[in-house]
Length: 468
Image 1 (cartoon, rainbow, N blue to C red):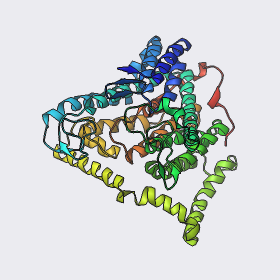
Image 2: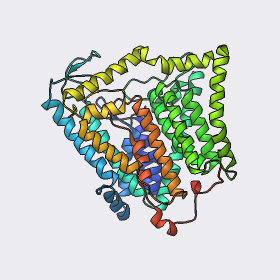
Image 3: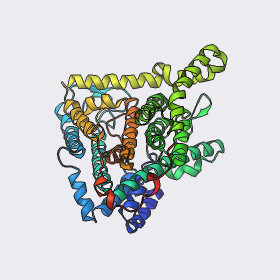
Protein backbone atom coordinates (compact mmCIF):
# COMPACT_ATOMS: atom_id res chain seq x y z
CA UNK A 1 0.00 0.00 0.00
CA UNK A 2 1.25 3.49 -0.86
CA UNK A 3 -0.10 6.99 -0.27
CA UNK A 4 0.18 9.24 -3.32
CA UNK A 5 0.82 13.02 -3.12
CA UNK A 6 -2.86 13.71 -3.88
CA UNK A 7 -3.71 11.28 -1.08
CA UNK A 8 -1.54 13.19 1.39
CA UNK A 9 -3.26 16.42 0.35
CA UNK A 10 -6.64 14.71 0.81
CA UNK A 11 -5.76 13.60 4.35
CA UNK A 12 -4.43 17.03 5.37
CA UNK A 13 -7.50 18.72 3.91
CA UNK A 14 -9.75 16.22 5.67
CA UNK A 15 -8.12 16.90 9.06
CA UNK A 16 -8.50 20.65 8.50
CA UNK A 17 -12.16 20.28 7.47
CA UNK A 18 -12.90 18.32 10.64
CA UNK A 19 -12.10 21.51 12.55
CA UNK A 20 -14.46 23.52 10.33
CA UNK A 21 -17.42 21.22 10.83
CA UNK A 22 -19.44 18.55 9.05
CA UNK A 23 -20.91 20.88 6.40
CA UNK A 24 -17.50 22.11 5.24
CA UNK A 25 -16.27 18.52 5.16
CA UNK A 26 -19.22 17.39 3.08
CA UNK A 27 -18.81 20.33 0.68
CA UNK A 28 -15.19 19.42 -0.05
CA UNK A 29 -16.24 15.79 -0.43
CA UNK A 30 -18.80 16.67 -3.13
CA UNK A 31 -16.20 18.62 -5.13
CA UNK A 32 -13.71 15.75 -4.68
CA UNK A 33 -16.03 13.44 -6.63
CA UNK A 34 -14.66 15.15 -9.74
CA UNK A 35 -11.22 13.53 -9.31
CA UNK A 36 -12.04 10.40 -11.27
CA UNK A 37 -8.53 9.91 -12.69
CA UNK A 38 -6.76 10.31 -9.35
CA UNK A 39 -5.66 7.66 -6.86
CA UNK A 40 -5.18 8.87 -3.29
CA UNK A 41 -3.93 5.43 -2.25
CA UNK A 42 -2.73 2.39 -4.18
CA UNK A 43 -3.42 -1.03 -2.68
CA UNK A 44 -1.94 -3.56 -5.08
CA UNK A 45 -3.79 -3.00 -8.35
CA UNK A 46 -6.69 -1.23 -6.60
CA UNK A 47 -7.07 2.54 -6.70
CA UNK A 48 -8.61 4.40 -3.76
CA UNK A 49 -9.90 7.69 -5.17
CA UNK A 50 -9.70 10.93 -3.13
CA UNK A 51 -13.48 11.13 -2.72
CA UNK A 52 -13.65 7.60 -1.26
CA UNK A 53 -10.83 8.42 1.15
CA UNK A 54 -12.50 11.70 2.08
CA UNK A 55 -15.72 9.81 2.79
CA UNK A 56 -14.08 8.63 6.04
CA UNK A 57 -13.69 12.24 7.18
CA UNK A 58 -17.33 12.96 6.31
CA UNK A 59 -18.35 9.99 8.47
CA UNK A 60 -16.19 11.15 11.38
CA UNK A 61 -17.59 14.68 11.25
CA UNK A 62 -21.19 13.49 10.90
CA UNK A 63 -21.26 10.89 13.64
CA UNK A 64 -19.84 13.38 16.12
CA UNK A 65 -23.32 14.96 16.09
CA UNK A 66 -26.21 13.04 17.63
CA UNK A 67 -28.91 14.74 15.53
CA UNK A 68 -27.28 13.91 12.20
CA UNK A 69 -26.45 10.40 13.41
CA UNK A 70 -30.12 9.74 14.13
CA UNK A 71 -31.12 11.24 10.77
CA UNK A 72 -28.66 8.94 8.97
CA UNK A 73 -30.15 5.89 10.67
CA UNK A 74 -33.72 7.02 9.92
CA UNK A 75 -32.80 7.42 6.23
CA UNK A 76 -32.57 3.61 6.10
CA UNK A 77 -36.03 3.02 7.58
CA UNK A 78 -38.74 1.23 5.60
CA UNK A 79 -40.08 2.30 3.10
CA UNK A 80 -37.68 5.19 2.47
CA UNK A 81 -35.31 5.13 -0.54
CA UNK A 82 -32.37 4.31 1.72
CA UNK A 83 -34.07 1.06 2.76
CA UNK A 84 -34.35 -0.16 -0.82
CA UNK A 85 -30.79 0.91 -1.56
CA UNK A 86 -29.59 -0.98 1.53
CA UNK A 87 -31.45 -4.07 0.31
CA UNK A 88 -29.87 -3.72 -3.14
CA UNK A 89 -26.40 -3.47 -1.60
CA UNK A 90 -27.06 -6.54 0.55
CA UNK A 91 -28.32 -8.58 -2.39
CA UNK A 92 -25.45 -7.31 -4.53
CA UNK A 93 -22.74 -8.31 -2.04
CA UNK A 94 -24.32 -11.73 -1.50
CA UNK A 95 -24.56 -12.30 -5.24
CA UNK A 96 -20.96 -11.17 -5.80
CA UNK A 97 -19.54 -13.88 -3.56
CA UNK A 98 -22.09 -16.66 -4.10
CA UNK A 99 -23.30 -16.69 -7.70
CA UNK A 100 -19.95 -16.82 -9.59
CA UNK A 101 -19.06 -19.88 -7.49
CA UNK A 102 -22.43 -21.63 -7.42
CA UNK A 103 -22.94 -21.10 -11.17
CA UNK A 104 -19.29 -21.55 -12.20
CA UNK A 105 -19.01 -22.48 -15.86
CA UNK A 106 -22.76 -22.15 -16.49
CA UNK A 107 -22.27 -19.40 -19.07
CA UNK A 108 -19.54 -17.46 -20.87
CA UNK A 109 -18.81 -13.94 -19.60
CA UNK A 110 -16.84 -10.86 -20.57
CA UNK A 111 -15.27 -10.26 -17.14
CA UNK A 112 -15.31 -6.78 -15.63
CA UNK A 113 -12.22 -7.47 -13.54
CA UNK A 114 -9.37 -9.97 -13.54
CA UNK A 115 -10.43 -13.62 -13.72
CA UNK A 116 -8.49 -16.85 -13.29
CA UNK A 117 -8.14 -17.06 -17.08
CA UNK A 118 -5.67 -15.20 -19.26
CA UNK A 119 -6.81 -11.74 -20.32
CA UNK A 120 -7.30 -12.17 -24.07
CA UNK A 121 -10.23 -9.79 -24.44
CA UNK A 122 -12.58 -12.66 -25.26
CA UNK A 123 -15.26 -14.49 -23.27
CA UNK A 124 -14.29 -16.86 -20.47
CA UNK A 125 -16.30 -19.36 -18.38
CA UNK A 126 -18.23 -17.85 -15.48
CA UNK A 127 -16.25 -17.69 -12.25
CA UNK A 128 -15.13 -15.21 -9.56
CA UNK A 129 -13.36 -12.04 -10.72
CA UNK A 130 -11.50 -9.31 -8.84
CA UNK A 131 -14.26 -6.79 -9.43
CA UNK A 132 -16.70 -8.85 -7.35
CA UNK A 133 -14.88 -7.43 -4.33
CA UNK A 134 -14.15 -3.92 -5.61
CA UNK A 135 -17.69 -3.34 -6.86
CA UNK A 136 -19.06 -4.53 -3.51
CA UNK A 137 -16.83 -1.99 -1.75
CA UNK A 138 -17.88 0.80 -4.11
CA UNK A 139 -21.59 0.03 -3.74
CA UNK A 140 -21.23 -0.04 0.05
CA UNK A 141 -19.51 3.36 -0.13
CA UNK A 142 -22.44 4.62 -2.21
CA UNK A 143 -24.88 3.54 0.51
CA UNK A 144 -22.80 5.25 3.21
CA UNK A 145 -22.59 8.39 1.06
CA UNK A 146 -26.36 8.43 0.50
CA UNK A 147 -27.24 8.07 4.18
CA UNK A 148 -24.75 10.73 5.34
CA UNK A 149 -25.75 13.32 2.75
CA UNK A 150 -29.44 12.60 3.44
CA UNK A 151 -28.78 13.27 7.13
CA UNK A 152 -26.98 16.54 6.46
CA UNK A 153 -29.58 17.76 3.97
CA UNK A 154 -32.37 17.12 6.49
CA UNK A 155 -31.72 20.56 8.01
CA UNK A 156 -32.21 23.88 6.13
CA UNK A 157 -28.58 24.89 6.64
CA UNK A 158 -27.28 21.52 5.55
CA UNK A 159 -29.64 21.40 2.57
CA UNK A 160 -28.44 24.75 1.26
CA UNK A 161 -24.82 23.77 1.88
CA UNK A 162 -25.29 20.65 -0.26
CA UNK A 163 -26.98 22.65 -3.03
CA UNK A 164 -24.07 25.12 -3.05
CA UNK A 165 -21.58 22.25 -3.01
CA UNK A 166 -23.11 20.72 -6.15
CA UNK A 167 -22.97 24.10 -7.91
CA UNK A 168 -19.31 24.34 -6.85
CA UNK A 169 -18.82 20.86 -8.30
CA UNK A 170 -20.27 22.06 -11.63
CA UNK A 171 -17.90 25.04 -11.57
CA UNK A 172 -14.96 22.77 -10.79
CA UNK A 173 -15.91 20.50 -13.69
CA UNK A 174 -15.83 23.45 -16.10
CA UNK A 175 -12.49 24.66 -14.71
CA UNK A 176 -10.88 21.22 -15.01
CA UNK A 177 -12.15 20.92 -18.61
CA UNK A 178 -10.62 24.29 -19.52
CA UNK A 179 -7.34 23.29 -17.85
CA UNK A 180 -7.40 20.05 -19.82
CA UNK A 181 -7.68 21.97 -23.09
CA UNK A 182 -5.13 24.63 -22.15
CA UNK A 183 -2.48 22.18 -20.95
CA UNK A 184 -2.96 20.01 -24.05
CA UNK A 185 -2.57 22.80 -26.58
CA UNK A 186 0.32 24.43 -24.70
CA UNK A 187 2.21 21.15 -24.21
CA UNK A 188 1.99 21.36 -20.42
CA UNK A 189 0.00 18.20 -19.67
CA UNK A 190 2.38 17.48 -16.79
CA UNK A 191 0.61 20.19 -14.75
CA UNK A 192 -2.32 17.79 -14.17
CA UNK A 193 -0.18 14.70 -13.45
CA UNK A 194 -0.98 14.94 -9.73
CA UNK A 195 -4.65 14.16 -10.44
CA UNK A 196 -3.92 11.66 -13.23
CA UNK A 197 -2.09 8.93 -11.36
CA UNK A 198 -4.66 6.12 -11.20
CA UNK A 199 -3.46 2.66 -12.28
CA UNK A 200 -5.84 2.16 -15.16
CA UNK A 201 -5.82 3.27 -18.77
CA UNK A 202 -6.10 7.05 -19.11
CA UNK A 203 -7.02 8.69 -22.41
CA UNK A 204 -6.15 12.34 -21.81
CA UNK A 205 -4.09 13.04 -24.94
CA UNK A 206 -6.21 11.72 -27.82
CA UNK A 207 -8.10 13.45 -30.63
CA UNK A 208 -11.13 12.82 -32.83
CA UNK A 209 -11.43 14.61 -36.17
CA UNK A 210 -8.62 16.94 -35.13
CA UNK A 211 -10.41 17.89 -31.90
CA UNK A 212 -9.01 17.26 -28.43
CA UNK A 213 -11.09 14.72 -26.53
CA UNK A 214 -12.09 16.63 -23.41
CA UNK A 215 -11.58 14.53 -20.28
CA UNK A 216 -11.23 17.19 -17.60
CA UNK A 217 -10.35 15.41 -14.35
CA UNK A 218 -11.64 12.02 -15.54
CA UNK A 219 -9.91 9.05 -17.21
CA UNK A 220 -11.65 9.41 -20.57
CA UNK A 221 -14.08 11.55 -22.55
CA UNK A 222 -17.07 9.27 -21.88
CA UNK A 223 -16.68 9.69 -18.11
CA UNK A 224 -16.41 13.45 -18.50
CA UNK A 225 -19.44 13.55 -20.81
CA UNK A 226 -21.57 11.50 -18.43
CA UNK A 227 -20.67 13.61 -15.38
CA UNK A 228 -21.24 16.83 -17.29
CA UNK A 229 -24.72 15.72 -18.34
CA UNK A 230 -25.69 15.41 -14.69
CA UNK A 231 -24.18 18.73 -13.63
CA UNK A 232 -25.67 20.49 -16.67
CA UNK A 233 -29.09 19.19 -15.61
CA UNK A 234 -28.62 20.50 -12.07
CA UNK A 235 -27.41 24.04 -12.80
CA UNK A 236 -29.70 24.26 -15.85
CA UNK A 237 -32.74 23.53 -13.69
CA UNK A 238 -31.68 26.10 -11.10
CA UNK A 239 -31.29 28.67 -13.89
CA UNK A 240 -34.77 27.84 -15.21
CA UNK A 241 -36.14 28.42 -11.69
CA UNK A 242 -34.28 31.72 -11.32
CA UNK A 243 -31.87 30.63 -8.59
CA UNK A 244 -28.76 32.84 -8.97
CA UNK A 245 -29.34 33.00 -12.75
CA UNK A 246 -26.07 34.75 -13.59
CA UNK A 247 -24.02 31.99 -11.94
CA UNK A 248 -26.13 28.94 -12.79
CA UNK A 249 -26.85 30.18 -16.33
CA UNK A 250 -23.15 30.70 -17.06
CA UNK A 251 -22.27 27.26 -15.70
CA UNK A 252 -25.11 25.63 -17.66
CA UNK A 253 -24.03 27.27 -20.92
CA UNK A 254 -20.36 26.37 -20.36
CA UNK A 255 -21.28 22.77 -19.48
CA UNK A 256 -23.46 22.49 -22.59
CA UNK A 257 -20.69 23.74 -24.88
CA UNK A 258 -18.11 21.46 -23.27
CA UNK A 259 -20.23 18.30 -23.45
CA UNK A 260 -21.15 18.94 -27.11
CA UNK A 261 -17.49 19.40 -28.08
CA UNK A 262 -16.10 16.75 -25.74
CA UNK A 263 -16.16 14.13 -28.55
CA UNK A 264 -17.88 11.76 -26.12
CA UNK A 265 -20.53 9.72 -27.95
CA UNK A 266 -22.52 9.19 -24.75
CA UNK A 267 -22.22 12.86 -23.82
CA UNK A 268 -23.28 14.09 -27.24
CA UNK A 269 -26.12 11.59 -27.60
CA UNK A 270 -27.33 12.39 -24.09
CA UNK A 271 -27.38 16.15 -24.65
CA UNK A 272 -30.70 16.15 -26.52
CA UNK A 273 -32.61 14.22 -23.80
CA UNK A 274 -31.14 16.48 -21.11
CA UNK A 275 -32.20 19.60 -23.01
CA UNK A 276 -35.68 18.11 -23.39
CA UNK A 277 -35.83 17.54 -19.64
CA UNK A 278 -34.90 21.18 -19.04
CA UNK A 279 -37.40 22.35 -21.68
CA UNK A 280 -40.32 20.45 -20.16
CA UNK A 281 -39.23 21.48 -16.66
CA UNK A 282 -39.58 25.14 -17.73
CA UNK A 283 -42.82 24.48 -19.63
CA UNK A 284 -44.39 22.68 -16.68
CA UNK A 285 -43.38 25.37 -14.21
CA UNK A 286 -43.95 28.60 -16.12
CA UNK A 287 -45.64 27.95 -19.47
CA UNK A 288 -45.77 31.06 -21.67
CA UNK A 289 -46.04 34.10 -19.40
CA UNK A 290 -45.19 37.79 -19.66
CA UNK A 291 -43.88 37.59 -16.08
CA UNK A 292 -41.06 35.30 -17.22
CA UNK A 293 -39.90 36.90 -20.49
CA UNK A 294 -36.54 35.11 -20.85
CA UNK A 295 -38.00 31.65 -20.21
CA UNK A 296 -41.00 32.40 -22.46
CA UNK A 297 -38.73 33.43 -25.34
CA UNK A 298 -36.74 30.19 -25.01
CA UNK A 299 -39.90 28.09 -24.82
CA UNK A 300 -41.31 29.76 -27.94
CA UNK A 301 -38.14 30.06 -30.00
CA UNK A 302 -36.41 26.81 -29.02
CA UNK A 303 -38.48 24.48 -31.22
CA UNK A 304 -38.53 27.05 -34.06
CA UNK A 305 -34.75 27.38 -33.91
CA UNK A 306 -34.37 23.61 -34.02
CA UNK A 307 -36.60 23.36 -37.10
CA UNK A 308 -34.66 26.20 -38.75
CA UNK A 309 -31.33 24.47 -38.13
CA UNK A 310 -32.63 21.19 -39.60
CA UNK A 311 -33.94 22.99 -42.69
CA UNK A 312 -30.67 24.88 -43.08
CA UNK A 313 -28.71 21.63 -42.88
CA UNK A 314 -30.90 20.16 -45.63
CA UNK A 315 -30.70 23.21 -47.89
CA UNK A 316 -26.98 23.98 -47.47
CA UNK A 317 -25.30 20.61 -47.54
CA UNK A 318 -21.77 21.99 -47.88
CA UNK A 319 -21.97 24.35 -44.90
CA UNK A 320 -23.56 21.69 -42.71
CA UNK A 321 -21.08 18.97 -43.72
CA UNK A 322 -18.64 19.45 -40.76
CA UNK A 323 -21.52 19.17 -38.29
CA UNK A 324 -22.96 16.12 -40.06
CA UNK A 325 -19.54 14.46 -40.15
CA UNK A 326 -19.04 15.14 -36.43
CA UNK A 327 -22.42 13.66 -35.51
CA UNK A 328 -21.97 10.76 -37.91
CA UNK A 329 -18.57 9.80 -36.49
CA UNK A 330 -19.61 10.01 -32.85
CA UNK A 331 -23.21 8.78 -32.99
CA UNK A 332 -24.73 7.51 -36.23
CA UNK A 333 -21.77 5.38 -37.38
CA UNK A 334 -20.56 4.51 -33.89
CA UNK A 335 -22.02 1.00 -34.04
CA UNK A 336 -19.85 0.21 -37.07
CA UNK A 337 -16.58 1.15 -35.39
CA UNK A 338 -14.36 -1.31 -33.50
CA UNK A 339 -15.39 0.34 -30.22
CA UNK A 340 -19.09 0.17 -31.13
CA UNK A 341 -18.88 -3.50 -32.14
CA UNK A 342 -17.03 -4.29 -28.91
CA UNK A 343 -19.65 -2.51 -26.77
CA UNK A 344 -22.47 -4.31 -28.58
CA UNK A 345 -20.74 -7.61 -27.86
CA UNK A 346 -20.51 -6.70 -24.15
CA UNK A 347 -24.26 -6.19 -23.97
CA UNK A 348 -25.04 -9.30 -26.01
CA UNK A 349 -22.95 -11.54 -23.75
CA UNK A 350 -24.35 -9.87 -20.61
CA UNK A 351 -27.98 -10.33 -21.65
CA UNK A 352 -27.24 -13.96 -22.53
CA UNK A 353 -25.77 -14.34 -19.02
CA UNK A 354 -29.09 -13.11 -17.62
CA UNK A 355 -30.99 -15.67 -19.69
CA UNK A 356 -28.58 -18.53 -18.95
CA UNK A 357 -28.97 -17.98 -15.19
CA UNK A 358 -32.79 -17.87 -15.45
CA UNK A 359 -32.91 -14.28 -14.21
CA UNK A 360 -30.61 -14.75 -11.18
CA UNK A 361 -27.70 -12.84 -12.70
CA UNK A 362 -24.05 -13.80 -12.40
CA UNK A 363 -23.15 -11.65 -9.41
CA UNK A 364 -22.32 -8.01 -8.73
CA UNK A 365 -19.22 -6.88 -10.61
CA UNK A 366 -18.83 -10.08 -12.61
CA UNK A 367 -19.54 -8.99 -16.19
CA UNK A 368 -18.72 -5.93 -18.26
CA UNK A 369 -21.53 -4.23 -20.14
CA UNK A 370 -22.09 -0.99 -22.03
CA UNK A 371 -25.50 -0.07 -20.61
CA UNK A 372 -26.76 0.35 -17.06
CA UNK A 373 -30.03 -1.47 -17.72
CA UNK A 374 -28.26 -4.53 -19.10
CA UNK A 375 -25.74 -4.36 -16.24
CA UNK A 376 -28.52 -4.56 -13.65
CA UNK A 377 -30.11 -7.62 -15.22
CA UNK A 378 -26.84 -9.44 -15.90
CA UNK A 379 -25.16 -8.75 -12.54
CA UNK A 380 -27.91 -8.74 -9.89
CA UNK A 381 -30.77 -10.29 -11.85
CA UNK A 382 -34.48 -9.68 -11.54
CA UNK A 383 -34.42 -9.26 -7.74
CA UNK A 384 -31.67 -6.63 -7.80
CA UNK A 385 -33.34 -4.79 -10.67
CA UNK A 386 -36.66 -4.65 -8.78
CA UNK A 387 -34.90 -3.31 -5.67
CA UNK A 388 -33.21 -0.60 -7.73
CA UNK A 389 -36.54 0.36 -9.30
CA UNK A 390 -38.10 0.68 -5.84
CA UNK A 391 -35.19 2.91 -4.83
CA UNK A 392 -35.57 5.08 -7.92
CA UNK A 393 -39.35 5.35 -7.62
CA UNK A 394 -39.31 6.32 -3.94
CA UNK A 395 -36.40 8.72 -4.45
CA UNK A 396 -37.40 10.51 -7.66
CA UNK A 397 -41.14 10.09 -8.24
CA UNK A 398 -42.66 10.89 -4.85
CA UNK A 399 -43.65 14.58 -4.52
CA UNK A 400 -42.20 16.36 -1.48
CA UNK A 401 -42.72 19.82 -0.04
CA UNK A 402 -44.37 22.93 -1.46
CA UNK A 403 -43.99 23.57 -5.17
CA UNK A 404 -42.02 26.73 -5.96
CA UNK A 405 -40.11 26.83 -2.67
CA UNK A 406 -36.32 26.79 -2.55
CA UNK A 407 -36.10 23.16 -1.31
CA UNK A 408 -38.59 22.04 -3.96
CA UNK A 409 -36.58 23.70 -6.73
CA UNK A 410 -33.32 22.13 -5.55
CA UNK A 411 -34.96 18.71 -5.24
CA UNK A 412 -36.21 19.02 -8.82
CA UNK A 413 -32.72 20.04 -9.94
CA UNK A 414 -31.24 17.02 -8.14
CA UNK A 415 -33.81 14.68 -9.70
CA UNK A 416 -33.08 16.08 -13.15
CA UNK A 417 -29.35 15.67 -12.50
CA UNK A 418 -29.85 12.02 -11.55
CA UNK A 419 -31.83 11.54 -14.77
CA UNK A 420 -28.96 13.14 -16.69
CA UNK A 421 -26.46 10.75 -15.12
CA UNK A 422 -28.78 7.79 -15.75
CA UNK A 423 -29.03 8.77 -19.43
CA UNK A 424 -25.24 8.67 -19.61
CA UNK A 425 -25.22 5.32 -17.80
CA UNK A 426 -27.76 3.82 -20.19
CA UNK A 427 -25.47 4.77 -23.06
CA UNK A 428 -22.24 3.29 -21.75
CA UNK A 429 -22.02 2.11 -18.11
CA UNK A 430 -19.77 -0.95 -17.61
CA UNK A 431 -21.50 -1.91 -14.34
CA UNK A 432 -24.22 -0.93 -11.87
CA UNK A 433 -22.10 1.31 -9.62
CA UNK A 434 -23.15 4.87 -10.47
CA UNK A 435 -20.60 6.83 -8.49
CA UNK A 436 -20.67 8.97 -5.37
CA UNK A 437 -22.04 12.10 -7.06
CA UNK A 438 -25.16 10.23 -8.18
CA UNK A 439 -25.94 9.26 -4.59
CA UNK A 440 -25.19 12.76 -3.33
CA UNK A 441 -27.79 14.04 -5.78
CA UNK A 442 -30.22 11.26 -4.91
CA UNK A 443 -29.93 12.11 -1.20
CA UNK A 444 -30.62 15.79 -1.91
CA UNK A 445 -33.61 14.79 -4.07
CA UNK A 446 -35.05 12.90 -1.07
CA UNK A 447 -34.31 15.47 1.63
CA UNK A 448 -37.21 17.34 3.27
CA UNK A 449 -35.83 20.21 5.40
CA UNK A 450 -39.07 22.24 5.27
CA UNK A 451 -40.16 21.38 8.79
CA UNK A 452 -37.34 23.51 10.22
CA UNK A 453 -37.28 26.22 7.54
CA UNK A 454 -39.17 28.65 9.77
CA UNK A 455 -36.38 28.43 12.32
CA UNK A 456 -33.54 28.69 9.76
CA UNK A 457 -31.29 31.77 9.47
CA UNK A 458 -31.70 34.40 6.78
CA UNK A 459 -31.62 33.15 3.17
CA UNK A 460 -28.18 32.51 1.76
CA UNK A 461 -26.60 31.93 -1.63
CA UNK A 462 -28.79 30.04 -4.07
CA UNK A 463 -32.05 30.69 -2.24
CA UNK A 464 -32.14 34.24 -3.50
CA UNK A 465 -31.84 35.67 -6.99
CA UNK A 466 -33.92 37.26 -9.68
CA UNK A 467 -35.98 34.97 -11.87
CA UNK A 468 -34.65 34.52 -15.39
